[in-house]
Image (cartoon, rainbow, N blue to C red; front, side, top):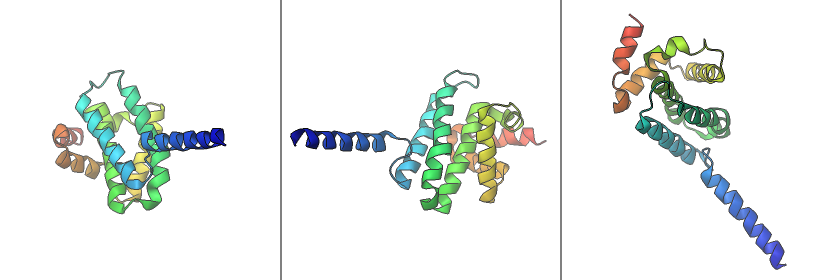
Length: 155
């Protein structure tokens, strides 16, 4: 009986650990907190555009988009959905800079698939990519130059 109780306790502990350590979180609020922490960490790294360290962040973003968002979408408020998808545009801007709009969708890699998903979800929320970039420019001090870069891109 003791062995059975210990096995059950171990299983519960492992499940609790997974729920706490998963970027998806166990509810929509944890998911958004984890996504915002991910974005803050990414911005704090100030990685160069070509750094090999981006791969780790790309993998985490992929998890947020492909696994976490679908898990919590039904319970997210419209505002939270907008914050998430606008945040993903900020990620791509930090990753590729002003050339992101011409680069994304044209490289034939799996980030193109993620970018397509970002654009689709923004469109469903009636948000244009340029509007998302302006929101990021207004919101994130680290990316203050987005507006200037965007203006150059569309001139």
